[in-house]
Image 1 (spheres, one colour):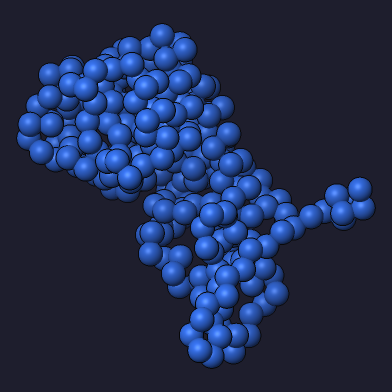
Image 2 (cartoon, helix red, strand yellow):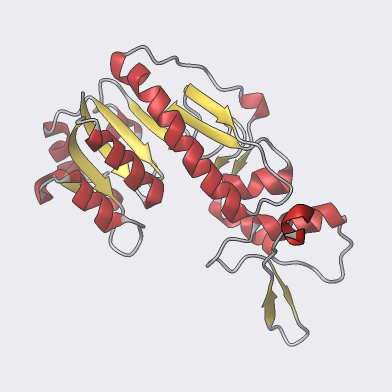
Amino acid sequence: MRILYLGNNWLGYQILKWLKEQEEEVVGLVVHPKGKGKYRDEIIKCSALGQDAIFDGSQLNQDKVSRAIKNLQPAIGISVMFGYILRPQFLAIFPKGVINLHPAYLPYNRGAYPNVWSIVDGTPAGVTIHYIDAGVDTGDIILSCEVPIEAVDTGESLYHKLENALTRLFVEAWPLIKSGKAPRIAQENKMATHHNVSDVERIDRIDLNRNYKAQDLINIIRARTFFPHKGGYFELENGRRVFLRLQLFYEEEIDQ
């Protein structure tokens, strides 16, 4: 099956590497612009494609780019940690649709920073492979898996757990997708939660004059602990910010 791959970040690199190891037919690649993506060079090298089959994700709405992708005759698109919204006219290129790997237990935590909001809001954490439709993370689910949050998890440790779980889930799902036997399970929209990139700003600033439940404050700080990101902070009287990162250990780990 001819694949257009839209990838970014470590997970985007790992999934592409696995597809190439399976000798799948990746005919085109879409990456983030220089300076706006992670593992960009590794993904490009792994694809082993010529420049005429590699596209800038910020230019997908240009007619010439759409035509060039259509000329590759991809049957399916695979989106992994790809940061650009795909419009209906682009999705229409693919007879077997476009699937997305999302590090959340949909319909919970559509959008940005699902690892943060699962900790802060107490919503289930997990991973989902779904079809892309006109909404943001709203398409039919192929497979999903819940990932437990431990008391010692931070935003960083949970994020890496979700990456690993998504890798395993994709390996399980790909034979179903390739054979055309993948299920399509409509999402329960009444249970859905959604967050934009800017939503973390409202929790990052810790108000020293506000009363917090201890659990809520711990959850905010640990959820935003993800080096090298700055995370949560409080402000001194002169406006200078003090940032916080939290380390958490089980008792038996401390005693060793």
